[in-house]
Image (cartoon, rainbow, N blue to C red; front, side):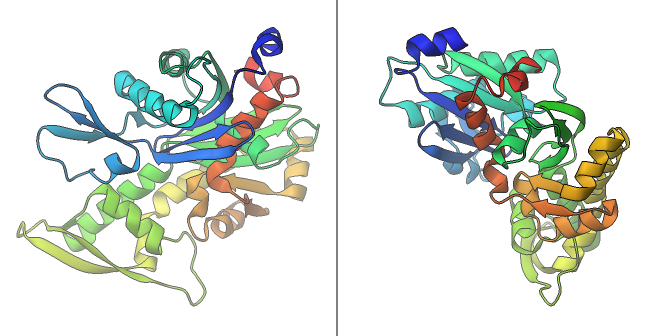
Amino acid sequence: MGLWRSVWGKYSREIGIDLGTANTLVYVRGRGVVLNEPSVVAVDRTNGAILAVGAEAKSMLGRTPMNIDAVRPLKDGVIADFEIAEAMLRHFLQQVHRRRTLVHPTVAIGIPSGVTEVERRAVRDAILRAGAREALLIAEPMAAAIGAGLPVSSPTGSMVVDIGGGTTEVAVISLNGVVAGSSERVAGDEIDEAIVSYLHHEFNLAIGLPTAEQLKLDIGCAYPLDGDERIAVARGRDLLTGLPKSVEVSSPQVREAIAVPVNGIADAIRSTLERTPPELASDIIEHGIVLTGGGALLRGIDRLLGEEIQMPVRVADDPLSCVVIGAGRALEEAEKFAKAFESF
């Protein structure tokens, strides 16, 4: 990697990618985060043509005619549909790299730490086929820690919890390596599904995942909010009559709905701490746990986890961008963070 950079560095473009189940973010050296789009593709079933990618495709979820599918090519943090994922990546790379078509970028991409070798190869192949010259993989919790500004290169223990759409990544990091960690498929998607299930059972109301996600964003909370309990209207289909129906939903009801997946995140943190060496555990008690990823924006989740784990928990300054910023910075400082790529 060092030799290639010495020859081609002045002509190439280095790119970091957070290929998420819910959203894909792209970081370009010298420009920062230049793209943040939903990981959704609209496909014409009759001929396989790509009709829309990103936000436009997401707006079609649950609304398409029979000949169009709006699909998410990733599930639980890994590629579920290789061809569509490749097309999506090519589209995004062309958006950020369109002016330098003769030079293919070097890409660092964050992926869940618990993926198999086959899944790693699928991500690498998709990036290369989408137009990258070189594809380097970095574990999402390591990238998140770098992006959050944690001292990953020092012997001090740091703990990061990256709550994405498909997975929650928990890691204790020291000396540029993951000392203890876990990758759990309990994250934003499961929280949305819990809201769908709750409205089904409590109100006989059928809603789609986009509606559940919007409820989570509008009034969702993991911890009682002092004087800030909210109400929203959920619209869907009455399961008894089959007719359109609206119900009022409160933030305490959403909190009840999502309790199981949120507690699953707390359990993942506990299990990781149980496997953490005592010296590093004392560092974490002193410096606390840092939350990253879109799930960190759920109101009150830092307070709930802090109460459950009995230690300080804080949300990173820009939790949505930590993984992609960390991947880009690791590529920019390749010698300093070489172990982050090599160990993965």
